[in-house]
Structures are given as structure tokens and as C-alpha cells.
Amino acid sequence: MDTIEERITALTPERRREVEDFVEFLLEKEKGLRRRRSKPKFAWAGALSDLRAKYTSVELQHKVSEWRIGDR
Image (cartoon, rainbow, N blue to C red; front, side, top):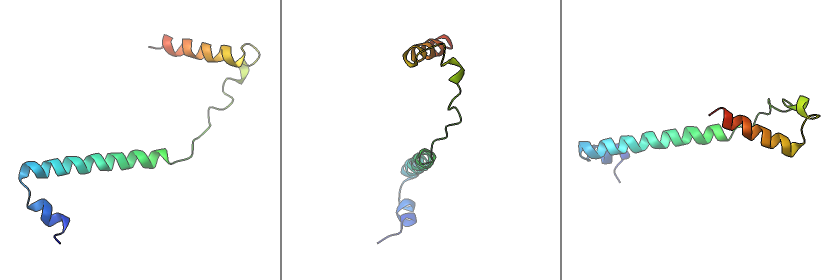
């Protein structure tokens, strides 16, 4: 069985570029998977607690939606 390097060397230059592109894609995908595996951080927890008396949870959800739409 040929090594992967020997197989790649046997390809045309165009196909070798395709292999390079695919390897780059896989590396980027792997990076993304590693990032997602980390535990979520809840630094934002309690950030809206001062609004608890002013809004119900449903009203606050609607208000946040309004704020997001306003930022666009």
C-alpha cells in the first residue's frame, strides 16, 4: 500500500490543490469542533437582574428582541 504522500505526489497539480483545499477545510472544521467542546461560560448570568422588578420574563424576552432588532 502506498503512503498518502506517494498517492498525493501521483496526482496532477490541479488535484493536489484540491487535496490541499480539502485538508484546510478539515483543519478548520476540527478547530470549530474543539471550540464547541469547551464548557459554556455564564459570565452574563444575572446581568439583567436589575430589570426583574420592571419586567416579567416574557416581557423581558420581548424587550430583548426589540433591542436586537433596533441594533440592525
